[in-house]
Image (cartoon, rainbow, N blue to C red; front, side, top):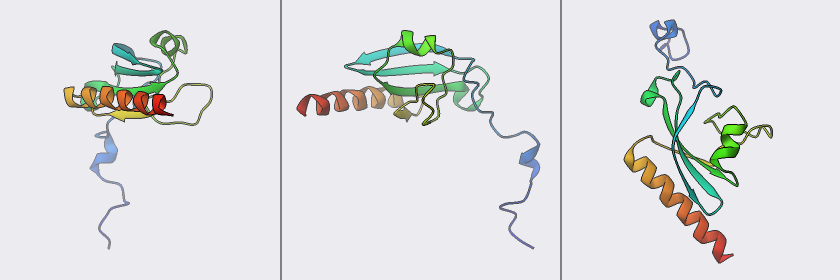
Amino acid sequence: MGLGMFSSSSCDDGCRFPNPNPKNFLIMHSFSIGNHLVVKVCYPDCTNYEGVKILVYKDTSVKKLKKQGSLDPHFSENKEYMSPIARFEPTKYGWDSAVSYARMVKTQERAK
């Protein structure tokens, strides 16, 4: 008899949040800072945080993100698609933190 940490439970019947569908996204807001881009993205198929993600990318633009046709909010080493370098909670605080992060990185890059 165990604690059931690794056994199936009633949660296995569908109460997990679905992963975002990387091909079904809408860029709601974006902000460029130097060569960094902060985006607020909605994934309608995702239920946690209403499907909203705040992501930071390096060396790209909104146009390039849209052009790739797929936008996975998870970190990845897949060279076919751009991967975010940072992710923040989808709140006003998260957006402000993402913008602050991008500004800080820009400042550090200028100092080099």
